[in-house]
Length: 257
Length: 271
Ligand SMILES: Nc1ncnc2c1ncn2[C@@H]1O[C@H](COP(=O)(O)OP(=O)(O)OP(=O)(O)O)[C@@H](O)[C@H]1O
Ligand SMILES: [Mg+2]
Image (cartoon, rainbow over all chains, first blue to last red; front, side, top):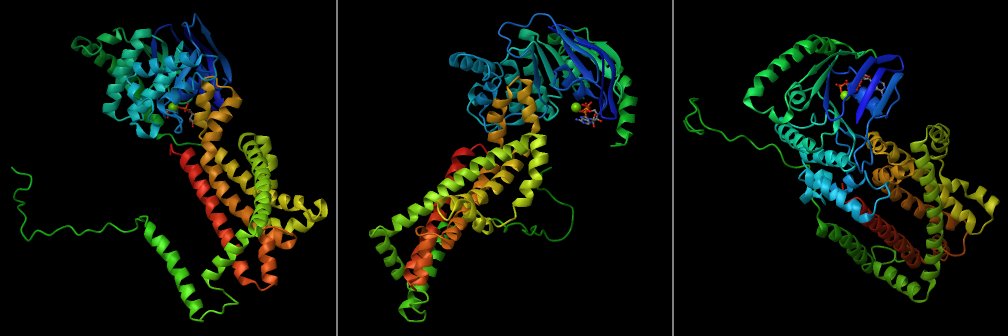
């Protein structure tokens, strides 16, 4: 399925955050979104999933949803958003419980999602017993258990330390390559964007405008190979020169609220 | 080069002095029981030696004996039953309505805007002061006492529930919405469990308030009940029975606290 934002603007009261954004995540791609702090990336993602209404413009989706899809547009959260009183399996089951599923089907789907992220042996653990990486695995399992058509990920790795992040990116990519679910992936980390994304959308500082969309013409599975490294480094340099001045200006901006 | 090798610095090696420790409380079960027993033993010795007047403060053994007598002849059961009935119905009524009001104020802006000033204004009134008014409304019988306890527990419950609901992370609610979970289920699966620690802490307060109010209300006008029993014993200068009644109240309070601790242990194991 694809997800399209057309002429989308958003303001919080008097604060314009996004201006006239035309952006589409095409079927089966990961579209990374980068931009300076406060430029409206999280807002964009909330608009894309219908959690807030845009002040202007439209958000539309088109195309078939996968079979058994229970929640076409599904989020993975930066702070994991796990219920501390539920076990790992219970947290994943939360996404299914309000659907009319037989008890056995619910159990099977949860077990399948857990095993895809290597969480089977933690099914009965509570979130507080898990490391950050494992908690985000639960967040991803909860998103996958509904067979989403579009994944919206808001800095899903930024609460993790660098090594955990590397491991989880590999795992996420492994799972993603099996189904190639359309994904919007917000990140601050250029290397992360270049490991995962088919295209990278670069935003200006607030009010966020789409500056450029950079394609990464190497299949994700091949990006670890030495041959790809050089080209990826070139793209990374190009991206960095695009955002450096904006990031520095955004960094020096004072809040007027 | 070895890690512990030559330092190159002259002078004697000195150990770094230890400055931590202390300020950590460890449970001491035996010491706790011993303190209580020592107090009772001291009292008993004081009474048998004649240091303490038998009329003003009878020996623990006599209080125990009086307790045995009223337990055996059924007096205790009648009075305790009357008090427990009032506490039970008053607390249940106040808690149910307080929970509903607190939930509403925690979740709906209109309910909060309208309800919070009212609740905050009425909360500090000592509810026993309303008993005469309630007696005028409902008569001297059970309803006025139950209403006093219900009023006394309603406000703390409403405020505890309100702030507990307010403290449930909004991110969890947004998460549930993003999965299409319907609103009633969000209340049941996220708001209530998230607010439960605060609600249970409120129960601790309302349980002791209910105990205070039942005794006070029974002293103002009741034939049966622990409060009435203590008052009658005082009028007859039966200090052994009076203290037996006080012991019953203390045990009752301890039992309720233990029950709540158990409930917290069962329901909040995830913390
Ligand atoms: N609910 C809100 N009400 C008012 N202002 C908001 C709200 N949410 C965000 N903002 C403001 O809108 C701007 C954009 O916020 P947003 O969270 O979308 O940025 P972001 O690009 O995700 O930033 P970051 O990189 O720090 O996550 C910020 O200046 C923020 O302070
Ligand atoms: Mg953000």
